Length: 243
Image (cartoon, rainbow, N blue to C red; front, top):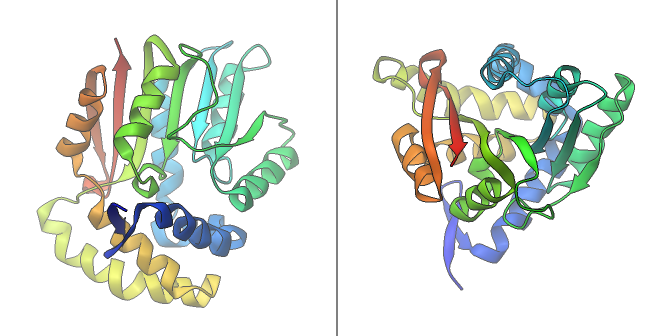
């Protein structure tokens, strides 16, 4: 059995999805509160920027992968309107249920699908946009997942990957202290789960840096790939255009 990483731990590939599922089963009830606290509300600005870059039009078809509690799905649904479609998906049922309930509370009924990004149950050339917000780093085979995202996009359509990345060097020391000293304690106090937020910090360090992810996206067939560093590189938005 091949090995992969789960944070800093080396695990069998078949075990990673189960371990990631356990993390998100644990954090789902407090996920949105923790997002606000640990990013000091900045995650809302990062998602708004993603929507601005995408610039979806009424009638657009959007696939939101690792959609979790539904922030991006809700934002895109408002832009594509009643003539458009936003499919809200996640591999984790607990997160998806939380997101579905939030969407219903805001008056949105969207197609909601439990699915694995590495084996998407959608036809070729189906979507105008694929979005994945803070989920790619948890996928076992990122190349397979990105190839699937490319497959389901129509030619000329956009993939938007919003993910934690490598911070600018002047911020590195402070960011390291915050990630490994503050974040796990915050997780323990607010979500009752220190280990899951330590995994979060570790998974960010194991995720490909900006240029590496750009090369990975081009390697699976995206014709043009660019990225936008946000908040000093704490987060990067990668945008890929299907040939």
